Image 1 (tube, rainbow over the protein chains, first blue to last red):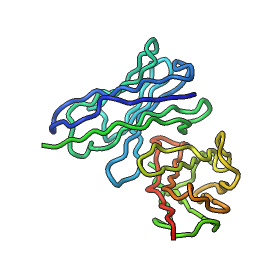
Image 2: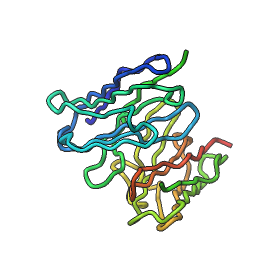
Image 3: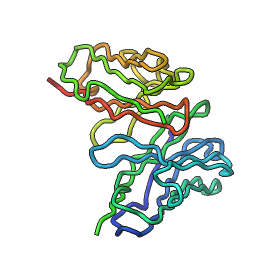
Image 4: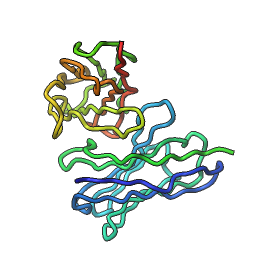
Length: 119
Length: 108
């Protein structure tokens, strides 16, 4: 069974930092592209970042470019999202998602972790 | 960036009825690279369809998809109680990946 479990969310002040983690099981982690997708309260889904299986290639949405970084530890089956210079607009539930092996849609999702940026 | 517009925003139907949801792209989606997801309240999204019309593993055949280019349709042939949820489309034909705003299917 494929499982993805996010952690690391919480309340942070504007300008602060957080690191999200996503522990996965049920598939060979290093073989798959992984991604972060977020959903602001009452809003639709927004793709945030993606990383190849080896971790050598990453891409970020323009909205987080220069502030967020994605990484992975294949020995620990864990995906990360380092978030710096957070703003209130980054308030959202952050989902870890597995990218299908054939194309860039998401075949499995975690339950998400909530990040709230507020004073 | 491809903008996906879903309509209607809210669809009020009764169990057993047919639901037809639209996802329109601001430009052609390459190779029909469009997916649909279901999101129940408080739950993570679940993949329903990919490649516009291919059902994901375990998805009942009452869910079907069609379309190409800029216009895509998700059809639920007979609504079951568990189908009342939000449905979202996503294009993966070009970067950045983008999602539609969602259609809420609610009980009438």
